[in-house]
Length: 199
Image (cartoon, one colour):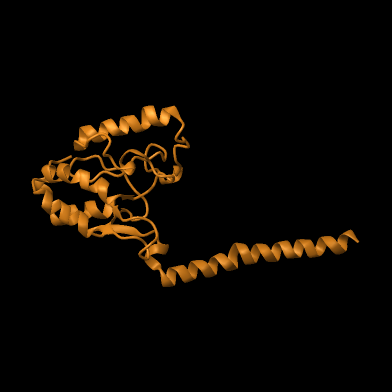
């Protein structure tokens, strides 16, 4: 009796392992590589034949002549192997008094923004800690700093921000956003780095 039940159970387990562990993932991977090769390969971004990042994963920028990403709680910041948020809620005193307060002070010092008029994404991290986007309002507050550091007018930099502002997905999902990596690459492409201080 036990043998009659055990054999089908083992066979079914092995069959399901083959189907769900090899056949199904193989089909999905093959379709993805065929239909969406760029996305399936990680949406990698290349400059002069060299991979500089992914359009899906943010990275830290600290130089004044680049737009800065939102804060990140992933590892030491934008660590793709340690994706996470702060796990601190709105009632956590440390979140308000330490993390957000220091981010606000940094934004005031770096970009001359006015307290009380700072976009939330400028001083808070995303849930994953890897968000590659900032809001158009966040980007607008950084335009003056980037323009000064690049030695050009704010209108020139703002035109690049406008050109790289993505609308809502399918017209209604999410919010307008700016991919920081792609915008900074466009800055280097459109404006000679000789205009900017060397790091």
